[in-house]
Image 1 (cartoon, one colour):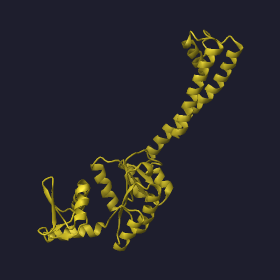
Image 2 (spheres, one colour):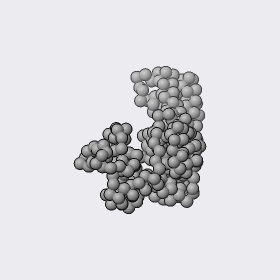
Image 3 (tube, helix red, strand yellow):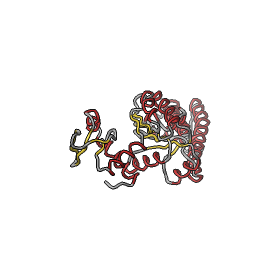
Image 4 (tube, rainbow, N blue to C red):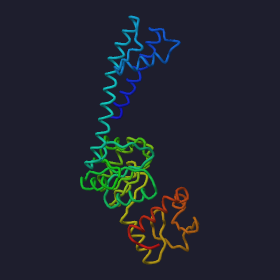
Length: 294
């Protein structure tokens, strides 16, 4: 719809430019360019004050072409503008989800269950742009009412991911069941090889499969949450990267912003050093979700 409006405006400008130069040449208005523009506008709008009129045969032919083309382009522009405004207002009034978003460097959240909802809240708190893809009508309606960008559709479908501007996104978070997560990861990776993909995993045996088909990171929310809760109960430390219980005295340690973090291996410590904020935010999210004090 926006594209048709753009084409209509370009056509209208082309008619104005054509009429301007046409009158400059046929009416010899080189020394009076404002009169050429004035005559073009009066011809298109059919006002015709009569103070300036074409006098040459060629000029009259230009006027006929400009009048017909200008009226057509003008009507097309007004219709496209009207359709755009009315369509947006209707979708807003009826509480309908977006058909396509206009974003860049955003995140795509696939699924708005418990995990997807928490992810959306954290991204919103960090002022990150995101759009949710969800099939359930009740969840979609809830997001529309709360002003959350949402596309109703199947995240496994290429057309739905295109509507979510997957080619311009910087990350995709699959927060559904393992089977749809698997298909979504495969589809997203084939469409955007450079996209960072994080997938929730429920069954441990699917973790390696999700990584093989394109997930950069897999997260078992139940396992990691349980590990952290048990660690808190036993007063033991856990690796912020992989979530493994470790002995703080014998583990590798790293100071970051006044806090000490312990790691089970050099690989986990290197991953934390590369993106510390990512893992700290994840730990905070788990704490808040499980209602555990630090």
